[in-house]
Image (cartoon, rainbow, N blue to C red):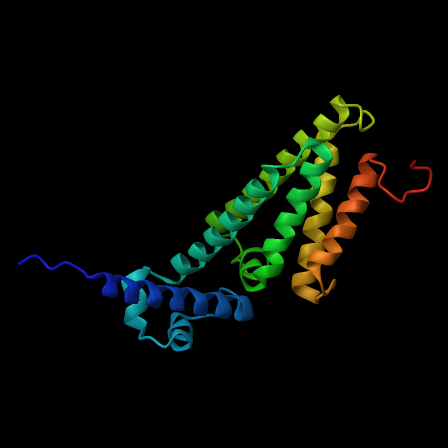
Length: 210
């Protein structure tokens, strides 16, 4: 007789996996990759060490899975936010606010991805770099759109995009490491306005605007 797993069994297995991933997220965020052991994760998840290896082959696979999760969440939220955005300025604003909102909502996961990643880990590093590259490319396209629509003065869109994304990255790292700013989402709105002015947009309330 062929054994077929029931829906109840599948649900139990999925719940156990989620408990393991949550425990891994908390341990890695607190202690980093090298300061965390599979035993630590198992203890926090309330399972045996052997159970973890039924799902993922080692500690590195656990860490990589968390980075993949963070990477996917940020890109998906940005894509959703841009769907109804009109014009380069609005696309810039909603993209950055969406990215910061995801990080604010998932601070442990953001810390795992951006602060606690093991040095020299090629796959993790590539995800972080790819995320920054994608964000920079989106900003560059939005700046070019603003220039073409004569909403922005002529400028090097690639350099502007690198500077735009760079300021956000530095603020996120400060928030994760130092707790400054305390509210990333609120600070993000100020940062968006600062960068939009730097590009050449005139915002409501600016002196001489209107």
